[in-house]
Length: 359
Image: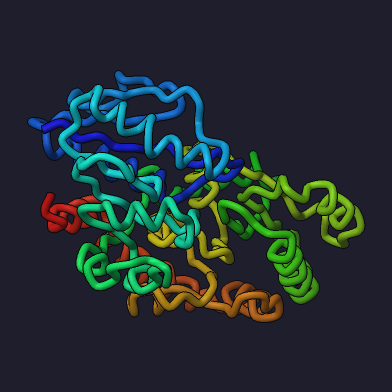
């Protein structure tokens, strides 16, 4: 069987945690199924020598830069490419599908694309199966879509997993990361694919409250895209009392990102951009406690292993930061709970769930 994996997304400056996870899951699937051939449709050249032997790539040189160009890609370019490679089915990891032709396709619904978009509505109607990360997203079908009952019957749920690069660091490794990124000091790591200006200001307010209480050299590292308001942000940081203790990293290679997680005092995941809870699972696997937004899609187990805050509540964020800092027993407890969950949320578990989709 020839299985295509479409990874082409709408051109943006942000990283999509979920698509990265799903591509890794497809690579895991390829390793488990050596008799099938997998063709990854990509927008940047890939070193084929690093892929499983049953994997190849097809390069799309012009990435869609607007919803109209994405619609054209899904109706003309992608179906033509699938015919060229003689694909038997396609996994649509970028959140939309072909809306022409009759190829079997599994669509991984993507929160980064508006569910109200015409392309998404038509994609769901054409999909053989629709995969989501939680029941909450499954219940969020656009009201304008027809045949709601028939479409709901297509839904399947799989859970996420952290890349194996995310792991606990030893004392020497931790200090090397701190020396290289935080002047040798402990730090909170705030992570999001993109932070709005309002979210960033709330984060600074919370850090200020923590620093006033703690009066130490603790730093705040921010891993997330802030480019859309960089000038506005520069003005704010220029007058921010603790500006020397805040560092904007925007994006880093995955191996560097994993080390930043592993050496962090705690991870702050304050922007819900991953339906598979990837920053949280990455922190769990790195043995680092997590402060995150309340989320109805959390399983009961995840909810008990994290410290949660209400959106836009800077005081609550600061309170949880203080609590973790002064209560080492609580911090150790959260690390242990997260470590136990990381042994459940694995690629093998996600693959077994995917197999139940039945295509």
